[in-house]
Image (cartoon, rainbow, N blue to C red; front, side, top):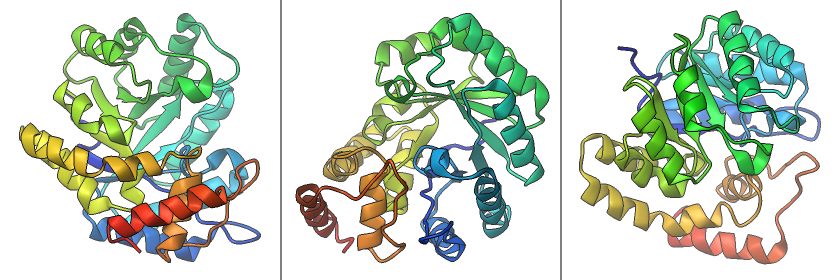
Length: 294
């Protein structure tokens, strides 16, 4: 049986920027903060990392920087999805050459592929690379949703490990668990659904909140892994206000604003993302203060 790329809390790390390019020094410090906090995996150049606004050179250098800084301590997984299969293959091959342990590949956005198209898209990428792949189902962003039957078909590919589920569809998650083999793994893609998804057989989370509270997200997921869902439920509820605040505006606006408030990076986003609304910004500071983060 295949082992999962990771279990527990994987951080969907932000990409800090300067006025001109990626702030690689700040990125290295953020990675050190994650490692010190016990994060179980680092996911780079995903949605939270604003990869869609980065040049190809920036993306690859960012991946290389994270791989070097992590230095084998935990798995590094690169977001390499695209709405062109060929582009996703190129990104995936280059990320593999940079030394990542795995790939996170979002459903192709805008094209709105059929389920048959999704199967062919993912199998074609998986055939072309030698790294394990995690699918990423986030229909609110892509306009397309994977079916459980599609997961069942893709689970037969040796390079496809499982899925980051951010659909919020618990019926889909249950059906996926019923139709797919035990070694097709599910990771929560929504912080506020971590404990419920792990109760249904999930093995961890790919987390936005872990950017600011890595220890707490690790504690939550490891309580689940140990079968202590009473403790996990209490931790999930304890983090509710913070998880909610980090999505008052579209991700990663709030989490990058929070990290800037914590003094961990500059508050720079790339258009079309822009600074947080003043009212939400003030409320976010209050929530961070409640949690002792500022």
